[in-house]
Amino acid sequence: MNQHKDIIKDASVLGIPKMLLLGLQHMFAMFGATILVPILVNSYFGSEGQILSVQVTLFCAGLGTLFFHLCAKLKVPAFLGSSFAFLGGFASIASFDSGIFQNMPDSEKLQYACGGILVAGLLYLVLALVIKLVGVKRVMRFLPPVVTGPIIICIGLSLAPSAVSNASTNWLIALVALAVIIIFNIWGKGMFKIIPILLGVVISYLFALCLHLIGITNADGSAILNFAGIAAAAPVGLPPFQLPKFNITAILIMAPIAIATMMEHIGDMSAISATVGENFLEDPGLHRTLIGDGIATSLSALIGGPANTTYGENTGVLELSRVHDPKVVRLAAVYAVILSFFPKVSELIGSMPASIIGGVSFILYGMISAIGVRNVVENHVDFTKSRNLIIAGVILVCGLGFTNGLTFTIAGTTITLTSLAIAAIAGILLNLILPGNDYHFGDDPDADSSRGVDLRPRELEKELKKKENN
Image (cartoon, rainbow, N blue to C red; front, side, top):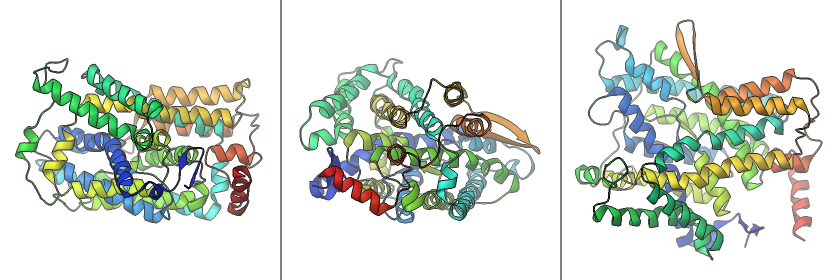
């Protein structure tokens, strides 16, 4: 078996049935957050029916993930789901009622929003070109562990309120989901040990169904399960694709958000690299992953879908399951594409109570933050130095404090930076400005390797791993 310290690099040794289950686990991990984006966007427009379709969203997530994997040489186990960073842009365009937007149907406003997202995705190519020209090593010199570690911590902790909010709809169900995951992850044997999230979802859903059938409701009095959407949905149907439209106002609102999502991408790539112990920033290269993420976002907007981004939820699955094979993530992408053509199945999975998503998120989001802590420890960041304390402290406060982001106006255009983008920018600037930088990129390849930025020749790295295994 191709594994090291219980880590499975090649899931094919488990057999096809187990691989299919592992892919299903990844799909459940991303599903709640991915479909939440169109639900929130539709609430901004306030129209009856779906302005941003759940079916199109699932199709774009699956297709975008597969395209990303092609760009990344099939090496990076990342899933691309719907990005929350662009929600502010959707809300702004939905509220427009002047100029060409006056009396415009909501469905057409969405087309202009997608036009702005398409341009935002193309901005990724600009950064990818810069990295290709100057090299990832020079870029990573601006991202030492005192910066990347706290950013990764923020990625997980910034999602924590979402986990608590979802779980609070029904704490009993959420605790059942959480308990099942912990039990199977700690005491499970064989296949049960590597699919704890899937088991948590299925068992807690059956538990929720039992509660629903005997008349128990959520804390707010609402029904635990709602099957109305399933009954109304058609068995089979094409996703309602639509082409984007372009307007300079919409572009100026959506495109600058790419600054935030590109910073998040670098943080996510560092987190995934550290999680699986591979140097994805060097091979296949940060420029390739940026191209994959950017074009996946543009392709999604081209057919009426939301922006895509790498998902921390699936990074948590990698850490928990210890199965790091990208093929498993591609299976989840295939599932998402297939589901997009079956409205009833999509609605069935969409009926999963928020409390289950909350219970699962307690584990996944915490795992991401724990990876950030591990990166700080393994890279020997010296917090006895005020300089490092200031950088880490500002990053944590920005990443967790700016819950609604930071909105400002330039040349009459309102731009919103997410909390993670603010944290990343603040950390990078402080690292450049403050004196006493004791980190020199490449001096400690083993420590760099623990956070996915080992730039040693691949042959040397393989030789070191071979010696370690012997």
